[in-house]
Length: 559
Image 1: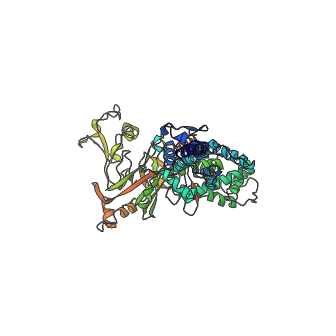
Image 2 (image 1 turned 135 degrees about the vertical axis):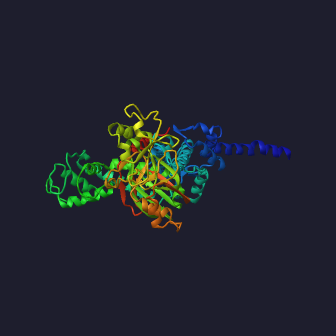
Image 3 (image 1 turned 120 degrees about the horizontal axis):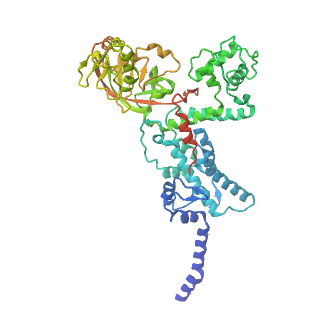
């Protein structure tokens, strides 16, 4: 009997066991195990020449599933989910991302090999199938990460970005497992979109621009050559650029495709189309074709695809919890201030922001107090550029502007005691302070949200500047057109602050600090493209030349 059992073990069961091992060794799951188990995940190994970018997460994902394939059935057949994943990679361009970052070329190549093999009635090698499984998983993890956090780290850019957001562990291995179990890759990725309601309409705007670009390649609207003018054009004027203006307005849908212009003449119907274009690009909708309108007309579909991609990425950098709070947003590219309460905009105002060489930075802080009838201590840059040269030309320069010369301990010094021809801002032993009043450069009130950039929002006596189209005019701080309205909103929780009391506080001889009963988040951002919730699209000029750096980082290939 013992000999019979020994015979069975030696000659029957052990060969069968060998067949099972051989089968496993030839399988894609065995490929995954032999590839991943001895690999240091932090080293980002290569899979068919492709770097496994999320190797740590992918390694954890396959370890948890005992190295079983995720995108295959019976080790040889691609699941429909695999095709869905490839489609989502292709669609990532509508998020402003680069499909090539997610192994698209290699995945496409393996798909082609797989489909060719199937058409010939054979199976693709288990090594190829295992590699495809790995690449699809890595692509999901990387794309999911980029949709939530953004591809570009804004803190690595030259442009200052100090809007902090949390960086939670997304457990992307678990998300991938759940997506495969639920049978929906798209929903899993969409769950990682920024939660702002404008993201999806912005994304659809980019999809439409890609459609416009395909149409442009067919139509080649005058090759989109750069238009130039030497003077502004009004209705009744003639110009050789009018035929091209008409073609571009028709291309963007502002004029009928069959519109026939009267030669080089600028007529009323063209003017109405120009007004719509101007509104889209944030200009005064006056129908006058000036340099700003020419800039807008020169924007090709490719230019706008770039701009849209950049701003979708910026939206991914913003904290998700902003939508839940009482919030102040200033979009410096749009010269606009918005105060939002319970998701409703309760105040919109024009603002003046920093000049190109004193650009207003991007950051977030908390508004905690305001100052009525503020004094203004002149910063060193303005002291150097304006006050000292002004005193050299006119000894009454400071007196006319109600400025006083003070020691750093606050003691007033006669301006006549200083030889202004010999002083400079470097090592200047005094400070210059402007008294409160209508003349004060900060106006009648300033709104404080302490930050390392020393930027704040304030009133201004130069009210006429708000009528200008380009309002990049300050030294970095933000001047608001509606300071009284903002003060009322900030103090509305205190019945003691009546309109009369606020107006009185703004016209005192001494400044008055008023602490708010809550801290209000203030976000200073820079969006040169956005949409409304109903899909209307708006573009703005890149006044600070920040867009290109983001775009170059976006298109930089990984690996």
